[in-house]
Image (cartoon, rainbow, N blue to C red):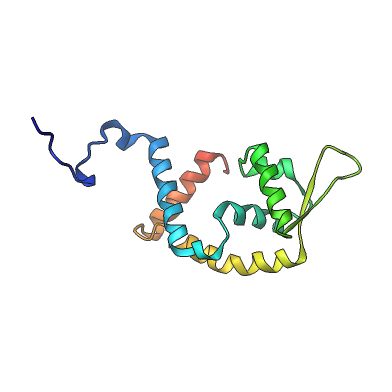
Length: 151
């Protein structure tokens, strides 16, 4: 007996339709796909921009605090900061009061680059969820902030 050929719209997700983790993951994939379609040629990934943006607004932030705030694992954060340092975007400093800590600051050229990137990055961010009303977008943002513990 042949199985019916289904289109993507006909695939039964059953209980996954209401599984929050599953839906959040699909939303993340959709956002990233859209980002790389719209902004991929700019050479700056969303995670990299987020790290640089937070450093811009918190010069001298400790690498461990930055990683915790952005929920980036320590090993990945170390690798990312080294890569940004190799690109001349950040400088690292070991404070005298805690030789195990690392303080991160943007280089002057990175400050300019991040400020310029903010224009297109936040314009892109503003386009996410264009199928939502302003009120729905505001509600989704509030719910996501609450869900991840930002409020």
